[in-house]
Image (cartoon, rainbow, N blue to C red; front, side, top):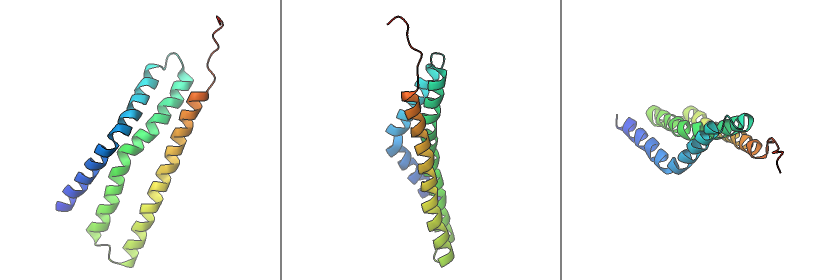
Length: 121
């Protein structure tokens, strides 16, 4: 049971450390929703672009904690468990990085997407 509390504490510490970034992504997503009527295409790119990293910042500490808890819980002293968990600990962040890159690509598309030209200028 102590391992569960320690894993929960680790997740909460990660959230505390990541709080400025989580708030930034949440604010960006909220602004995209508020601006949806004016620029729906751009807001869609921005909402998904902020949403993906926000989701990753919320879910990845939990996933990492589950992997580490699994290692500790099984007593990963055997070669099999050590190798499989090392593989997980390297693949999961790699997949997360690819998704984060897609999110930032969508933010770039939102920034540089065409907007209607104002004819009064």
